[in-house]
Image (cartoon, rainbow, N blue to C red; front, side):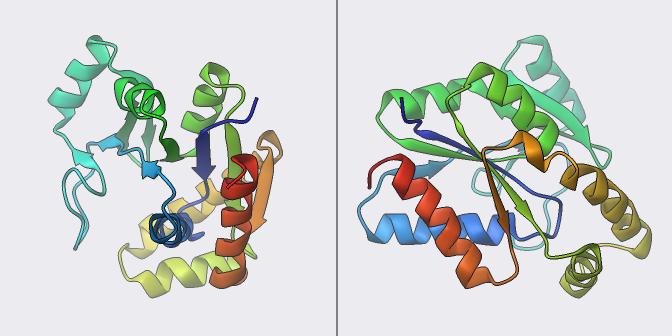
Length: 190
């Protein structure tokens, strides 16, 4: 059975958000019904991020209350902040016949793959650790301390790529986007 659920993960700075946005733009221009599942987080919004569009931004108390109510399919603490995937949103979108994309860390991806074993899992890697450091530095979003922590985390994350059905190395944004689209459209027969 082909899956309508796509789980996409990558180390911070590998380009998964940009790749997913480009793939969703292409899909919407070609009448394909893909939707991005919006995760919840306790991290503060970055410049330009919109609540309910990029993430649902919650206080830690709100997030912990949702955990008690078992609202998350998975949740994890990543770089000191909670992130979680609301299970009702995935199931509602799948029941509407939509193809759902999850942009998620590797820990959450492995948990979700247990619940949805037929899901298409995709790991996006940077070309190298040096290139990842350059991308994170060029973004200008994080301090050197945070970048170093993200690099350490990325090395562990990249060692988990063999748990995913598909691996894409983001050397070129155009080529990586084409590779992601090939997976999305091939697995769903267009």
